[in-house]
Length: 283
Image (cartoon, rainbow, N blue to C red):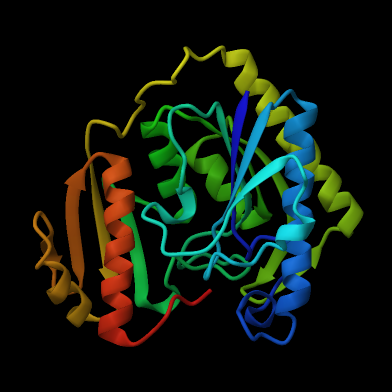
């Protein structure tokens, strides 16, 4: 049983502000500790449910947030950037389940630290005209690779977003959004227990599915359309230089292809946007 964990930071237990999750933020070092322990809770749950291999991908910002010497000793850590597949680096059809730890809701929602990849630079995104953020895009891409997302932890807004996308995914809310930078927190020990139990339940469900060896392509493998609305029309005008990318309007680009291909191409979109605007991703 091979389990993949994508670890973001905004949805981690106790964290509510940019100072908690951004490099050089006042409380960033403490945020790293909290992120590491949330991930460890998920690893424990996966192992308890029968996982024989657990890979953890540090998927936030610089992708050098998890404390390598404190990550569970039975987990393999993928760290640093650039990574061609970003938040899903090294995921392939040989895995049996994906766990999303510390995820947040999409741009425009009233969730803790809500945004879609680049904060203010991205106003909205759609997959086949369905509003999508990091949660839905990861879910669609994993599914196209033949690997189910079975668990997510984050605030209640992130959990609700995942449930709307796929109500079979087990969720663990670790905080309840009061506003974008405020939340009612679950006690830390209680939140970590919830993560561990949700991970164990999700992995157990995946094991019961008895997937064929090697997985297999799922929905989204044949082709989808990704549309991204940027704050700046300059970004859109540059992106149409990429073959296959067209304008929907002055600030919105769209491109079609298999979900994994779109996921990788979107990483290129973000690098172009950072270069054009001089703005790094928000979180």
